[in-house]
Image 1: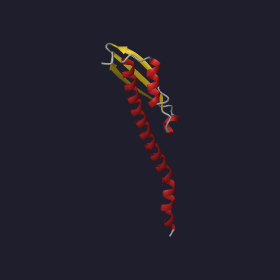
Image 2: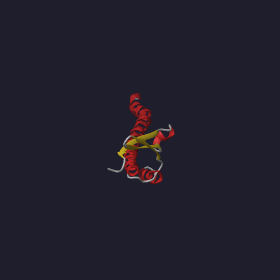
Image 3: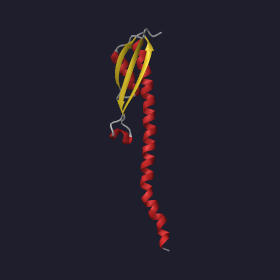
Image 4: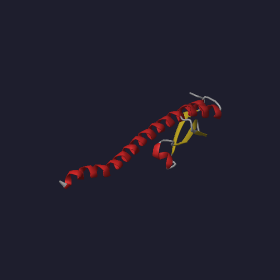
Length: 111
């Protein structure tokens, strides 16, 4: 009869760990989605810079997809490259100060 409550006690001990693990997994999926948006924003910004748009215009394009994105541009031969970085403001990863980065290049002149 004493063992009838053992399963309940074990479940009560394990359940918080399962919930924490599930939260971390969901947070990781959200961070991956944010990285994809940052990569798309870097490509859009690089194309805008290659077409001759200003740095401010390209930064605004990036911030339309990722509000906290910071743009750094550089010329690399025939290419214009856009480097974007943004802090992850999602779930437990925000507390650790995780910063996401992405780089994309486009042929200068918009060709």
